[in-house]
Length: 87
Image (tube, rainbow, N blue to C red; front, top):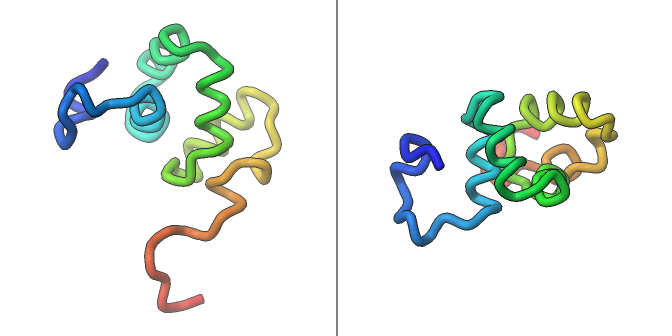
């Protein structure tokens, strides 16, 4: 685990899903590989498909790598969670 990515959380409160989310959004390729080895590719793909807090750019990249349709991911299916005054 890279502590610099979890400055805002206590270590005991970091779940595998949170670690995978941070790896996808902010970690480098080496950290993403480390997380996949630690938790398995199936869990990584599950977070990639179901997590709404992932960056669309990162999700798009990993969907291309794994041959997944990006429209099947929560990041592309669901509207953003923040307020958008101009729709």
